[in-house]
Image 1 (spheres, rainbow, N blue to C red):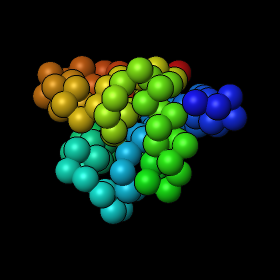
Image 2: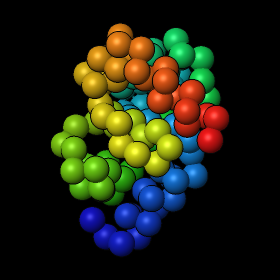
Image 3: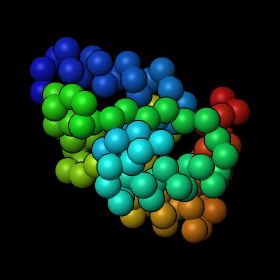
Image 4: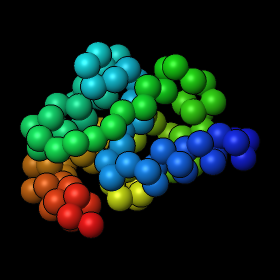
Length: 107
């Protein structure tokens, strides 16, 4: 990953309380896992940003290196990597995701 790509990703992560790096966008998810995350975020009813990794191959590959996580989607809350689709489902079902989101939005 080039330093420009890393800087771009860091800027996105740090300037948004909640951001989802995904295939597609919130209106048109392009894979089932990305759709799962969008549905969870929509059920929480909180503001969040999406970054379509299909629009930029450098971001698509760079985000994997940035997080040391091999798959997409990737969710960041308050600048911290939370996980992908499966982790988001687990956190949502346990109620822990709602807590994390409330803390992030209150800060």
